[in-house]
Image (cartoon, rainbow, N blue to C red; front, side):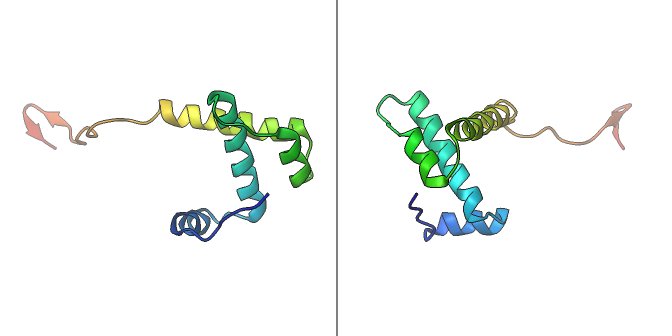
Length: 95
């Protein structure tokens, strides 16, 4: 699996999260599988990904399933809009 780790964003994410090459490969594999699942114009070969990473197809699908579950959880818990002000009012006075 060829990776381009030279972009500014890739370097930033690698630095912020302390990502290893193996973790980056898992992220890319998971993204490709999930994209192929939901986007009919995108094609990927799970067997080829598994062979390139020396992992089984069920392992690759497991990564993709966990990544998708985490993404769905995150998207459902994003609060939109301005956060509420953190102040309590007692008898019309701020405390």
